[in-house]
Image (tube, helix red, strand yellow):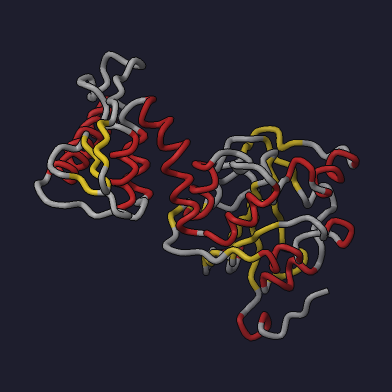
Length: 295
């Protein structure tokens, strides 16, 4: 535990120095007609010079940024140059609560809009300026396959979670995971992340997704009307909210297996209170799945 603390501390201090180095080099930093001229606290725009206020951390006396934070504008522009690198955002969040709050409120939001702009435009079209379960949770869902632990959500299956380079989420595919009476809901679902040759379990696929405006969805209303129970111990790996089993609620349509290229009786998924979905399926052999039909 102590070694892990010092490793995190060292990494976060290095990150702070790295961000300062980026912004303190004596050359022009061109970002949308905004330039930095040596001093990271002086943002120069056409005909304008803005002195940005620094923020002092008041959350922890052990915070490595005791001399004051870089301003939000400076950090935002630095991460724009880093293309909203998720590993860098996660590392910055470990520095202190102030950085963690800024990452949750701003940086993860920009990451999500950059990685899935069309999906985010649709999710926000209901009038909400945020998404259910926080931007950080959505960012994790976009790039992380949760896998499962033995004795957890999917019984004796054990596959470690891992980051994925790129995943396609489809609104059209999402319709296949909804009962006919719920298909006015909007659900984005990923392609299955394949984990082949898992012993007796065969070839497994893990998929994940997110509902638009889940709090007013027909799926949520049906789960409540059917008195569906939450999982007694497990929570959503993305936002830590409680989970409903769609299989136990008898709400898994046969069309889900056809869309995934999986055996109909081997598809299971959960939905959390914030509308995040995660599931597992046993994939058909390629020669069989090519001819799989939707029902």
